[in-house]
Amino acid sequence: MGSAKSAMLILLLAMVIASCATAMDMSVFSYDENHHVTAGPGQSVTAGPGRRQSVFDAEAGLIFESWMVKHGKVYDSVAEKERRLTIFEDNLRFITNRNAENLGYRLGLNRFADLSLHEYGQVCHGADPRPPSNHVFMTSSNRYRTCAGDVLPKTVDWRKEGALTDVKDQGHCRSCWAFSTVGAVEGLNKIVTGELVTLSEQDLINCNKENNGCGGGKVETAYEFIINNGGLTTDNDYPYKAVNGVCDGHLKENTKNVMIDGYENLPANNELALTKAVAHQPVTAVIDSSSREFQLYESGIFDGTCGTNLNHGVVVVGYGTENGRDYWIVRNSWGNTWGEAGYMKMARNIVNPRGLCGIAMRASYPLKNSSSTYKSSIV
Image (spheres, one colour):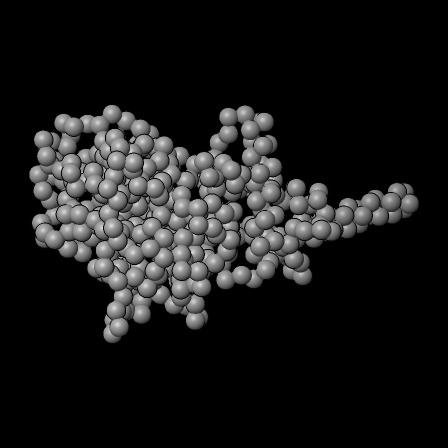
């Protein structure tokens, strides 16, 4: 009887030791409520050589399930879920390894963490930087060209001035061209009239036939449509659907639309001119957002891998300096779960005159001289 009890105690002790060992292995990294990957006591989050693959796979699976709940992800089949998990694991490795380098910015498991880089590009890149073939290209204006003696604010943030609506989400529609255009118009309208009006991207998607709706478009053509076709109606009257639709002319006939008087392009490859413009109003910019670091950006001043293959429309809504590093405040159209609540701090005043991600290559802004918010639409 004594030997049986001894055997039972030995077995229980072995189970406790095994349980503790497993717990230590599984605490190599964890995933908090903000979806940050963190290390356990005395451990490293780097998912590199020497890491136990089985432990990584087990924890990545748990993290994936938590991430799915947060972002409301549901997949059509078990096979599709497994495919997404494989991509997610690869992105998780990339994130943990990059963050271990202690860069000036952090990557995270945002809404795009289950997309490959190719898939991300197909969903998110919809701005065409080339002028339309039938378009007499507007030359750059000297309005915001810098001059000796210019004194500009050290920091500008149009969010603090109440000139920006809530961050919007273009969804799976490649309509960043419309969101960037509308964001700049909303901001200018607030500055000139004192009234913040949430305008309709769907109006541009459905009615601006010279652009391709969810297939992509050009900022110049969008501005010209607003000027020549009775302005833009409100998002409340013409809500966003994230799909192409038929232009509802009757809807526009009976509403008052926000007008602009024109638009201008900034001198190319001139961050100082862009700074001067942003000190006066939010500015549309077409940038290159095609890198994996951009896809998975979470916070901090981004100065990661970035080219100049312009493909994504954003709004530059401010600038500043933090710990001696200059940055732009860039408003995106990917919802408030990407980046810093929908925004990115992007390195400013870099050596390349094109700016990081080409931010100074193709920037433009609307003009509005009238203090009247609305003008009756053209019938």
